[in-house]
Length: 101
Length: 101
Image (cartoon, rainbow over all chains, first blue to last red; front, side, top):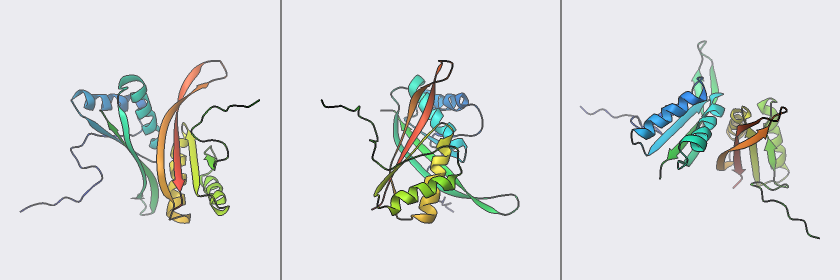
């Protein structure tokens, strides 16, 4: 029996760093860990208020630690999330793809 | 005497909406005002924590009020700002260009 997975923008197995509420430096280190293990591409994702932190992460990374890293694409979107009370609300998302030449 | 202006990413005269701390809807209305006056292109700019709000503005605008609007480009960067005490610090920036087909 074969199992078909739904297609997603970033398949598991890709080097994705999901930005949350921790300090920016934590996410920079997560990106560097991927790069040091030989990754050629990293995807930085965030939702809602963490979007600013995602941009901070990418900028700090490119400015200080990985100057050859290129921003390949930036996509924004909206996700519908269901709250605990069953109400639905929309949250903005960002997905920044970085590549090493 | 001719006066030469330094080249900037977005020259004055273009339809720029600078995102600050007001509610998202205020900036959506600002964008709609430009569109209703015949603008074919709008640039939404933000710095620091307002970056999330810039993405919210664009998403709400495209989802609800101007569904034909296309995201032409998204650029991120860093600006050096000088604080009152003379200290310098870096702030992330975003510039989202929207176009009507």
